[in-house]
Length: 341
Ligand SMILES: [Mg+2]
Image 1: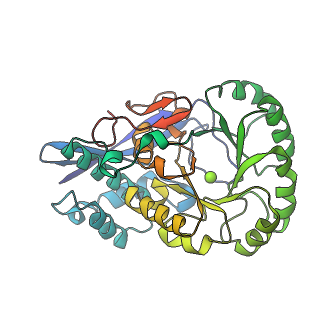
Image 2: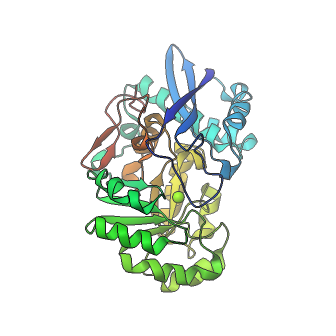
Image 3: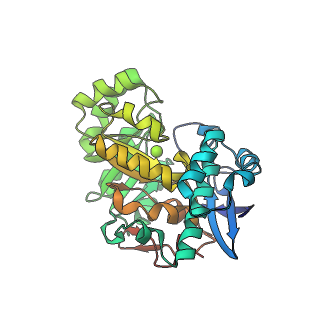
């Protein structure tokens, strides 16, 4: 197996602002850089994408420094994806965005060698995939009408909250989109001591779920707030990897899984199995990334309750094709591997 990588730049239509400082988009909020990984074996190339997040102390530099040490750990059996990923995580537990890119590339390679898409090799049924939400970034409230009008193809909107004017924003959004489902994501933005009040403030807006209301590890405040919350609470920053999940039962109603956060498809499938056993809801999200990374997530999207795979839809110059978007649903294509070119 031969590992290589290159950087690419893509651009979002709008600057992407969230409550938590140090979010992943830079350069006036519109340019994003990603590392695209290739693994070649017997003349076939599999590809994956690293979308590092500063919140997890990951940068493109740390991704590429980790990748530079991974070649000797890959071995010569690309079909042993689970053991390769386990081997990499022993040494690179903090570099899960890099491990995820390798996991994706190995899956892409596996599918291409078998001549089948990954969802088919796992026995999943893409016709069961739920519609995705579309994210509206925090911005001038005056821009909301235009932004909502651009989400006509989506039945579910996700809005970033955690600002002093959350209620005003939601009042306006509900007026503009009376029939859509609305998810909110506080990205750690609410104070634990104030949590019950903040949930009470936003509950009248008929929300589908609230993502990561507080900073991480605020389990007592969350457990207490959950008793009276009419809206399900979903962990995101708190649910990075499989070993986080068990402690979240009783604290949250569900977990948000992202490939670049957990380390790829193998780790995501472990989290799905754990959450199901604990009777927790499962959301599948992504970073702002190209449709290469989102296609990897789309392969397993039939196995989750809430889909939030809009990262590539926020881009104006996605360099990959093949991922399907129709009737509000992001669906993997029928091409072998991850299904993109
Ligand atoms: Mg989130």
